[in-house]
Image 1 (cartoon, rainbow, N blue to C red):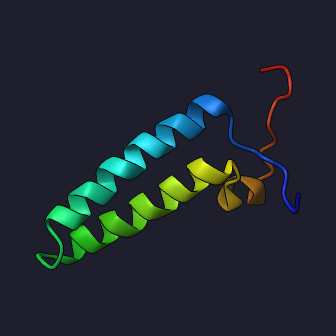
Image 2 (image 1 turned 180 degrees about the vertical axis):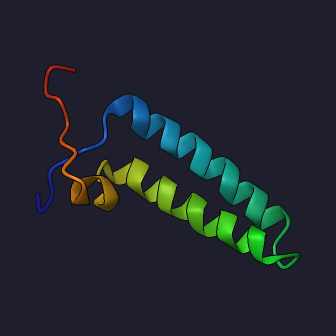
Amino acid sequence: MLYVKNVPNWERALRLIVGAIALVFAIMNWGTSTVVVGAGIMGLILAMTGLVGFCPMCAMVGRKLDKRQ
């Protein structure tokens, strides 16, 4: 594995749910404004970090997954 997971399972599930909601919102309203495009990009990033379990921004600030969970 090239990375160490730094997102706990409860947060992964939350990221997947919120990312899916944002993607559905963006798909339903595509082309109406730039806010919709931003919501689609945000939803895609949240869904991907939820699927993979690694968040590059969390890694940059030094967040590590607590193994006791």
